[in-house]
Image 1 (cartoon, one colour):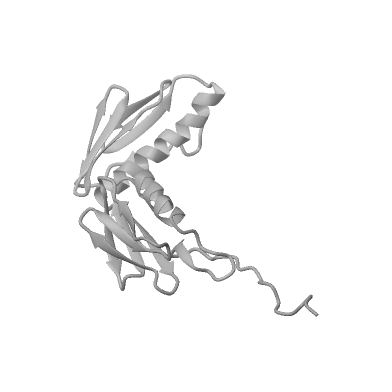
Image 2 (cartoon, rainbow, N blue to C red):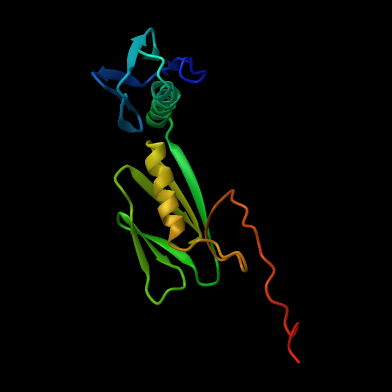
Length: 182
């Protein structure tokens, strides 16, 4: 049995969980989320714990067992506390500002880049160079942060671009002036 899949998901105070056939729905102070349960797996609610169990011992079902449990656990944590992802903008003249439900970025292009925020993700900008994304859905939040970072990936030579707050950019040594010139 999957070591992660067999662990029950504890339902904290203030979170309501409903099982609708092949889907688990969670509702809490940070919002509502729904996670489908793959075929071959079933979800049961037992005294404030959600248990994901599998019907067979097929390799694919075993692999999905731990995944489904982790996704449901992330959903429960998300509707209670929410998730957060920080990005930093590095570079002269690179900055960001909030414009309604979008982020306007100056990233060294000839035009400002408008990045629309998906529903369920909020942004906060500090000092025009630090972006904090918050949301209940961990997967959507990570995907949004990755799409934002992809607008201007960090340059390995100067380190300019959008990077995650805890990311370390591997720097490369540039050309030496006059190394091969006569």
